[in-house]
Image (spheres, rainbow, N blue to C red):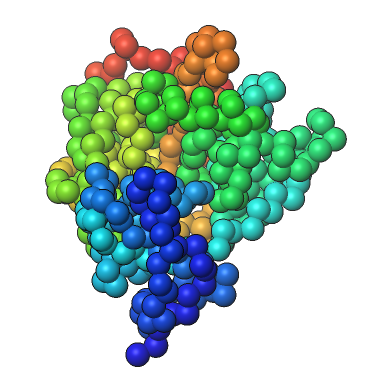
Length: 414
């Protein structure tokens, strides 16, 4: 049986300052089924032996010890076989006991390549510690293995180069630099537009990140959805976890794998077959708005993954019944089904929206230094703005929410 050669002498022990060096067994990690990322020559093998019971789950234990990796990345590493406990593959939730030996294959960090690129940006606010941008659709926030250029950070590097004569990554906070995402405090999906804040200094980065972690800031979105929720305002309090069968998707799940997820929604405008919804996030789960709106039977226009439909001029006059129209079901299209719909949409000349109609409209937070309340709003732009203008030509009577809202729609949609 093939075994993996040890890559490091950095054996570590949890305990009171007593770091013991463990013997390195020549046969410790089975690599016959490991993915390519864990076969790289730069992979480091680290071992820990516990001197006492741990009060944390395995993923939390490793997050506290492996710098530069988020908890999600640690969980991913566990799921692909990069971690063993006593030479057996564990779960992220495994509780560690005294004497347990944890072995970890740490993949190489992606290269930090922030070459300045002249990508247009709409800067909403900028000062010494941070910058706020109204992100356009199609722009990934930071480099990843499949997208090493053309990102928001590449665009900011160019912006700093023009403004300060420096396009070096040092113009951004160093926090997260090892993961090729310096300065990134929060993220928006590739095709989600709107307000995003990026830190330029480490101290401001930590202070702002703490607000996101503690949920003391206010995040408000706009979405165009199929149909009109009834009632026109309410709370969606449904836990979200990984979709049980679709690898790329999330889903409402009532089991130990899910996390609390709360979304407030308010219908602001009604159209024939569609509505414009203001959404307030109380938690920040992956794809939260998209999953929650799909779950109540009103998926986002253009959200192919979660049962929304691409919408062109033809669909404005004849609104389709979306695939996720039935409420309280876990729905997601397979990657193959999604790609087919995307190709069909791309071949049409009248297409308005074939990606999720979602916009981060407002972010309210405390200034990291003065603690002054700051509110940033980003007008809707691009395809989503055009879609809303076309839908406004097709109004539909019915109840909408007018009180307790945050967004001035006349200002948001020019």
